[in-house]
Length: 141
Ligand SMILES: Cc1cc2nc3c(=O)[nH]c(=O)nc-3n(C[C@H](O)[C@H](O)[C@H](O)COP(=O)(O)O)c2cc1C
Image (cartoon, rainbow, N blue to C red; front, top):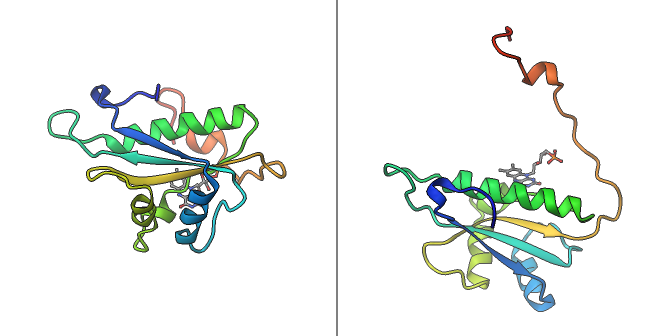
């Protein structure tokens, strides 16, 4: 909630689900299954309203909020993952979840973050080196 947002429109909202029955209902539409063992799920909602000169920056708003949550989740010793592509592709899983959660019109469920204690340490995927992604001043690429 403290994340910055374009013109402070605060277009991002959250539904925290820790009710076991509701989690079961949501899991029934998350197919193939994901985050099945997580005891809680944070669903991220957006409203794509205009912020500045007719332009929506709702994607940037919710990306900032999600990153803040991932950092805090990790700092507190929990684990999560940013699941967005999985919910917003042609299968419409996010829309089905929004139906179960009775999300109001004008709000879109764009991402879920399962939250739980990690069973083991995270295996980080390889990252490109600093030399491939960072330059000082006008150093050549
Ligand atoms: C916008 C966005 C959408 C994502 N959607 C998915 C997804 O649908 N399914 C998934 O398994 N991971 C998803 N991820 C997680 C990425 O796959 C993951 O962050 C990336 O592989 C790098 O791994 P790391 O976060 O451990 O460094 C998404 C990440 C972002 C930023």
